[in-house]
Length: 192
Image (cartoon, rainbow, N blue to C red; front, side, top):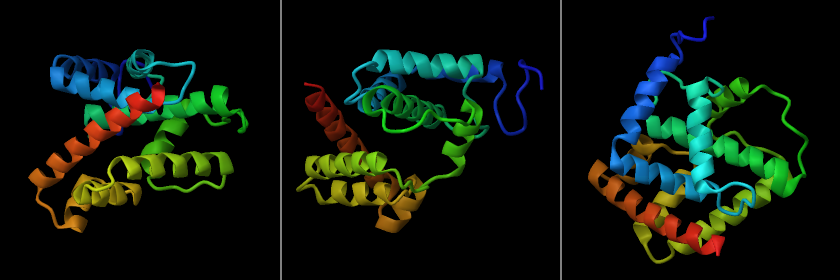
């Protein structure tokens, strides 16, 4: 398949460039993307938020990471940043895992296809439990935020969480914004 063309399942490089240009032209999305990057680099010694965001965008533009057709820019950017940060943790911080053997393209496809996949790696499980505990403590006392954290921890996406919680979209968005602000504060405090 030619580098300049996408497939029915993923965006072509020109489409990726247009999507990223649109994202970077919207101040609110840039702030949200940077906030996400700060959360993902929390605890990493070898990568900061600016580097992570830049690397994610560069990999998308270069075609090293795939952009599935139909996914919003923030969702794709989040998955790519998560994957890069996760790889950094494996490589530099924990060194408990063997280097990945799958190609990046397959890893990226797995991220989108295997939502909620479990792992048996003790380091990954412990890290996830520690992160969830810190998040739970950060939202303690805010019943709606606690419910949202539980829904998200169960792997529910926006529409499913709205339905499960019996909320309207406006309430979901308001609680999610509160949660993001608390997570931003948590990430800032953990870096200190």
